[in-house]
Image (tube, rainbow, N blue to C red):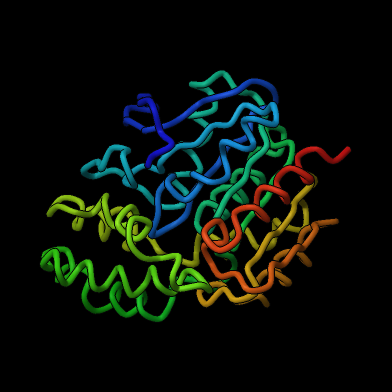
Length: 277
């Protein structure tokens, strides 16, 4: 199942996206290793609540273009978000963002506070919390070799990582696991994963805005799975503590892919946050 229904050329590149509903725009930004599939049990409920929900695959991810010689870092994705909003004629929006999408949302709020009404970040990378030791070792020692690995070896590698994203391992099996692996089921897909995602796992993109977080004036909610093995809970506390008046909400028994472990809770938190006075 995919949420995305259309394609749009933004700043010279093609993004796969979905733009449904009316009312205040809400932009959903996914993380890594992922794509917009992760929002499938969340976005339809927000649309039904009367919001205009915009979901898209980051450049180099999912069904969006996998460009040659184009920056797909968190910083570049932040710039591209501004172009996407312009293309959709959206001046100001709520943002719901997960993992590296959280870094995109935070950077966007720092750079363009006038364009953000509210920001909800879910198990976001922050400060020096990323990349994980596994990905750091790959980046430092094996990145070029990994680009040519076999499909079987790649699937084994990514499956082991994806199994760590949920507290309930049974949720990352069968069709759900296949959906997360699907964008990489080709030589191009495997190479793109390392070139457009892993190569840009770099804490400099979050560390360089850390001093600016205290100046954020938009309402922020930090939503976190208490069993997150990639982004430990102490980063949630640090992040929420640095942002004025930010709410911290933690979910017991849930991991990094909170939308898999507890989709109903995610919907509830988004609803209450976006509807607050």
